[in-house]
Image (cartoon, rainbow, N blue to C red):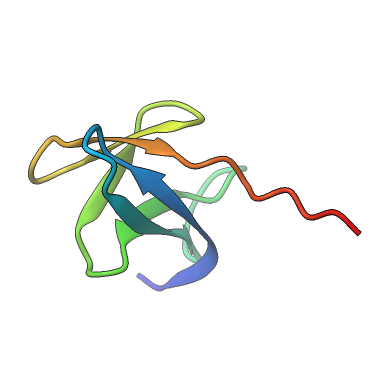
Amino acid sequence: MAAVLVGQFHARDAEGRVYSVHEFENSEATGEQPAITYKLAIGDRVKKIDEDHYELVQSGVSLIRDPAPVVTA
């Protein structure tokens, strides 16, 4: 099963540590919507709770997605 990197973002834990989260789309997904998985840059699996809340699978550490940076011209 192959996965393609489709996005990345930063998330923080309760102590303020920043994690780089990578978003993958499974190319062999069945059904109407592709399966999306999340992993840290170091390979740890991440579970999506809702739009802005995530959890590290192994340790159970809660993460909150940082808002996207606003770019002004």
